[in-house]
Length: 143
Image 1 (cartoon, rainbow, N blue to C red):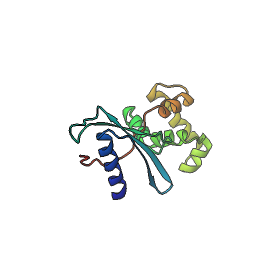
Image 2: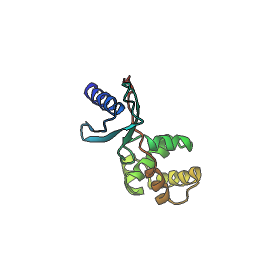
Image 3: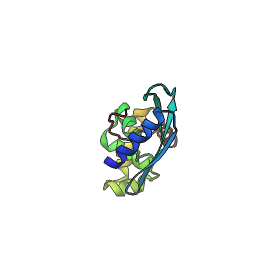
Image 4: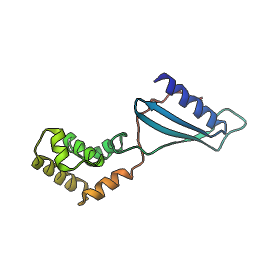
């Protein structure tokens, strides 16, 4: 959204000039906290390096599950099951929400284990939760 883009631009420009900035971006019920931290500020010019740190999001609010799924060759159905597991749903709840049998979900869970090489679903969910947040953002000229 234009207002959020301007807010990010302003914070990045400020951080590039040596001032730390903290943002809270909102879209409906979703929020994203962003810290803009100056790195090697350039006091002689208006440009400097800036580190953007995004607050951790839940499993399916960011793209890390999608990237994890693609890097392990998961099908869209397996990715949907992984997202549901990361959201804390059990096999029965996933089957109900996807309109399939529990057997189908259990088969997809077995496939998740085989493709990722992680035999424990708890460890798989922990691995995904430990990934850095990846959220969509349109980049524009920040100078």
